[in-house]
Image (cartoon, rainbow, N blue to C red):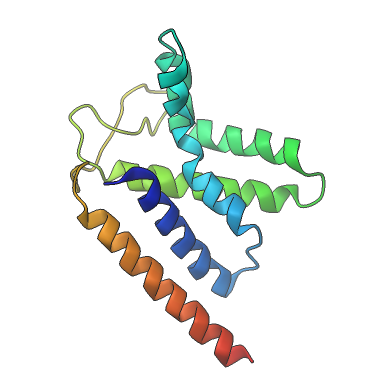
Length: 153
């Protein structure tokens, strides 16, 4: 699964779908939230082994805490909307990563109570079918948004 592109497309499609029912501002922040759990990838640029510290970001608790800290640092007005956008985007990322096949798991679902990583083993990491599915879902959501916008007018 080509990681970031798939996460962005699914997040954008999810935002399209949610915005039909709810007031969903901040699409850019929502998409940023879908990439936020991969902040642990900066480990490549650090000269020492930082994986034990950075892997916390790739957990539901870490993603929500990071979303909260960023939302408090960025804006005074609309912090709840920013937190929700980042949080839902981050959780969508973790749900997609949960589907990737892995021998040792991909997501520590119950951190900090358990350090066991879980995976549903649905799709292979190198399989492009997930990307194609993401593109199809995005295009369908985009068409629905266009149609919904035309109907409202």
